[in-house]
Structure formats: structure tokens, C-alpha cells
Image (cartoon, rainbow, N blue to C red; front, side, top):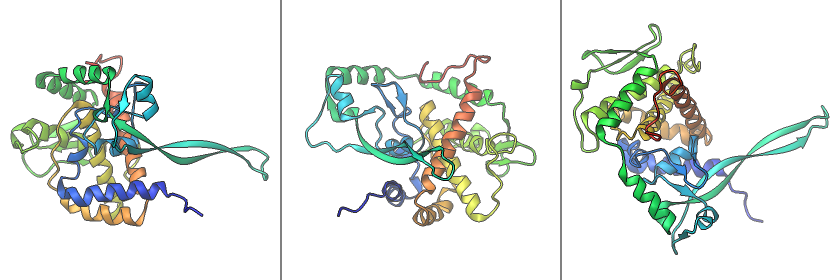
Length: 296
């Protein structure tokens, strides 16, 4: 009898492999695509753990074999797709209560990136993607995005970047306190740091109430959420992020925690997505008129 596949474990193993191979630059593989992974045939963006898994590939557009085929595109011979997950809801009759109970069950399926297919539709997508957004426009949108969250951000050379719950404020070095790196400009380093702290900021009791666990494990878990949240915001705003200086300090503890709990990365990715959704709800509302870079 064939053993039942453990999807949670498969996904966790893939993330651990990425962490161990990329070492302290682990966040970088998922933010090089310059946009949120999406399905061009449905117009929907991939969220949560799927956003992480697809971000590792460096591509942006993904669809199933049949979806590409319906658009006149052919997956090239020998190409291997990327596995992603979804929850399928089943109904079960509860004999004790007599009610129908909904049970979500994790399922997986395979998608292929635009670089793995051939066809006019794919060529048109690639051509439109190459038009891009100027760096000036991107910086303007990023500045407005940060401003529209309403977070109190204090710029100071002293100390490191952090979110302080007691004052509900964020402290970061000013822009001229950042240096360019091989993967990011100084301004991109500044943005990715602010995005990290904004993710922490969403955890306040008055917002998503996520910061109660003061233990070392709880602190490391929150840092993982903030790491993913920053990377997700960098994807949306097309910022090439640089790994934080304290990243290496947490990496080994994250790997150990993932090995002990196969559902941890799923939970962290879901919390990061929830935090980013909250921030985008503040940044892109009808009152301020700001559109995301995806629509700009």
C-alpha cells in the first residue's frame, strides 16, 4: 500500500532546504521576482505559504498545465512544475450534534512558471512585464505606502531598528545611515528595514494582537513572521531587499523550530500575509487614493 503523502512535511522540508543552502541570505531568493506571484489566467495573486514557495523560483506568473493550455500555451518538454497547496473543505456529519461540520484538508497541485511555457499569450505577458516601473515612481509609491499606514516612525542614528510596543513607535536609522549592498541600493535597504518593523507594528493589541508570547521561541517566531512580512511587501513594491544584520542570529533557531513543527512555516506565512493585508488596507484606501504598484 502506498504511503500517504505528508504535504505539511514536504513544504517544510523545501523551506528548510532553502534556508540551509542560502544561509544568511535566505530571504533574497524570494524577492527577486519584482512582483507578487500571480496566476495570469485568473488574475488572482498567490498568498501565504504559496507566495513563499513560488517566490523561491524568481518568476512571477504561474498557472496549471491546463490553464496555460487553455490560453494557447504549451509547457515545454522536460519542465518540472512547482508544487503549491490549497485547502479543500469537506463536510462531515457529526453524529453527536446532528450537524454538518466543515473540515479543511490540505491538498497540493502543480503550477508552471511563464518561463517554462511557449505561446503568444506568454510572449505578450513578458513584453508587458518588461515595461516595468521607474525607480523614481517606485520610491514615491513606497514612501506614500509607509506614510499611509499611520505608523509613528522615528529616525535616529542611535541603536538598531526596532518596534517599541510601550510607545507604539518604530525607530530606524535615517536613509543616510544605510549603505548599498551587492543586491540592494541604500534606499532599498532602508525600505526593507521599515517593512520589517511595520510587520511587528501590526502585532500590537490594538491591531492584530500577536505579541503576547515573550519567550525566546515566541520572539524568534515573531521575527520569522516579520522577515516574511518584509519580503512580501518588497515583492509588492518591487524592492530588492537586503537581509537584516540580526538575521543570522535567528536562522539556526528557525531551522530547528521548523524541524520540530512541520506546520510552523505555514502558520508564520499565514500570519505574515495577514499582517501585510492589514498594512495594505491602510495604505491603499479610498481616502488617500494611492494605488498599488501593481496597478500603477
